[in-house]
Image (cartoon, rainbow, N blue to C red):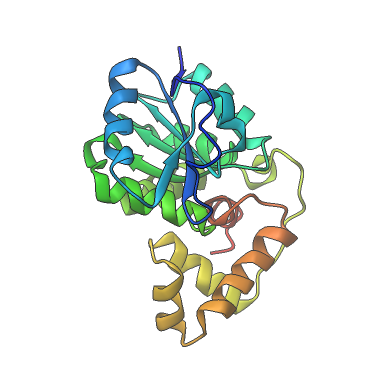
Length: 223
């Protein structure tokens, strides 16, 4: 059973436009309370009650493992264009990683590493349209998808598209865990150019976010 933050609507005066709104979904009350206690201390964030969860900028899903119930929740959140989804997970299998990315998750964090600073980084990165994925998980994703037939990889039937050298270089750097400023420094482009290039890739290929773009490019041998 996935639980959300209890409580009714917050008074209009409580919200601040410069805060990132977050809805928390967790598999049990203990997980839920632990994440809420950490996020509640951060002035950059505003936690929404379940009655307003669909309007959150960020949906944070906290689970032990990715099962069918979690996948169904992620797919439901993917259909909500108002929110971006992050996943905090206990154990993770390679096959589940591909399923998670295809379900629109833009950032993944292991529960063992989910301290307050890392949780804040994940939420703020998602709010900026950036992805967060541990390097070893990217390695698992690459190893897993390399064994699949390329003709069966894209479930929506997108044709195999090519990337420009610049797009491929930037996606490789995203795959290595670099954020916008680090990619700009590495490539000698401005941060605005980096954002525009990556936005063009995700828009052209009809992908949800940077992590999804990396997964797509890896699956199709483009990077």
